[in-house]
Amino acid sequence: MTPVSHEISDPAAMREQYRSTPLLEKDLATAPMEQFARWFETVALCGLHEPNAMVVSTAAADGRPTSRTVLLKRHDQRGFVFFTNYTSRKGREIEANRYVSLLFPWHALARQVIVTGTAGRIGRDETAAYFRTRPHGSQLGAWASDQSTPIATREELLHRYEELAARYPEGEQVPVPPQWGGFRVVPETVEFWQGHENRLHDRLRYVSEGNNDWRVERLCP
Image (cartoon, rainbow, N blue to C red; front, side, top):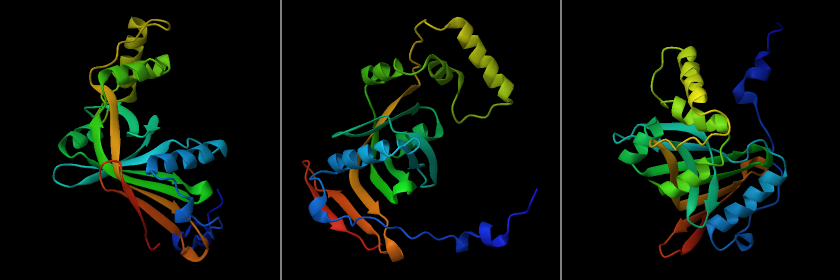
């Protein structure tokens, strides 16, 4: 195998010049979720792989943070929805500390969206409606995996899955796991970041003032 040169692998030497249209206050939507919908549609149409991938950061009651990539499954005026095992690490941390952060890293467009807010469980009817749309294998996987808990081997996980597949063959309805469901993140701030040359990026942040009112502030890059 040919070794990679130090110049290529040195992160300090990696640089990109971002060239894009300025993000101006006059061009923003009145509310952040409308602006997010505009950007999300643009990203989805450009063919970016999994544009709904977002980094979800939570913190335990003692303040220790953790982050992981999760798929956004719904966004509307109420906020951002994702699904998980409620007994997973993120599920337990949200129960202890409702404050979370979301990051959408759309590098191909030199854009990112950063959300801070509070997370809460959605209704079981809403969870069940989404669960029915998942592929059969993903429904079984939600039962087979005790997310975030240690497991001895991969074979043990596969054995659990195979037992469930025998119990609920393709075409048979799989019940919704009681420990599985959705969280909705209600935003308090939403920052839209657009990269530019010379690191003179645009950062426009919506800040909630209550009663569906928002003010926009520009941040130094």
